[in-house]
Length: 259
Image (cartoon, rainbow, N blue to C red; front, side, top):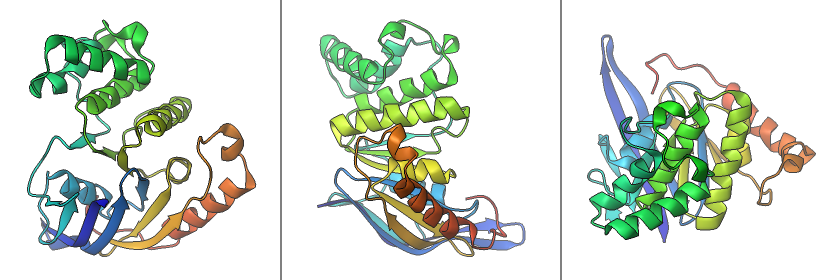
């Protein structure tokens, strides 16, 4: 069964000059356990599409079906991770990661055990009792990912989660994320502006275009997991990166607001 099914999804925003068509009848199916990245110019509707899947925005027409349910609002089955870390600054890493399981009604021992599992999965075991202000940007984002996993969603919706990180930290975070994904195989929809990141992470790369926001091309990334430095430097990887780059940048820039 498809995990996420976008069915002719459209969305228009009001602007000072009239309206801006962010999405125009977008249809896309993401299968259970698949890792799909979405890339495209600013204003192509990437984030709008994710926010509709998350239930944070409503479509003007069309619908999104997750599993066998039409999206009509937010749901614990859909974990969302943004570029901003959104951690509780007064809580330790452990308490931040325990927050979702606590809301779900798990006992103290159960949520502690679950939190420890995911803190270890993202490599923060030595910082479980640290406050967010003492962590680097990459560590904060790892904590945010652990917190999302600990809430036990079936789907992770990630909107530019590594966009604020330096290049080296970004590469390390990509490796951490793929390691976690390979062990748990949750369905992931990942928004990015970075072509190399899009290709390195994904089973498929969805390239969007502007004026209005539509799917331009879907490119399979038939490279094996685990993804390694050797794969990143291979001719096969360069070929797919070149194809995605051409699809993204050989198109006009958006005339409306960034979506």
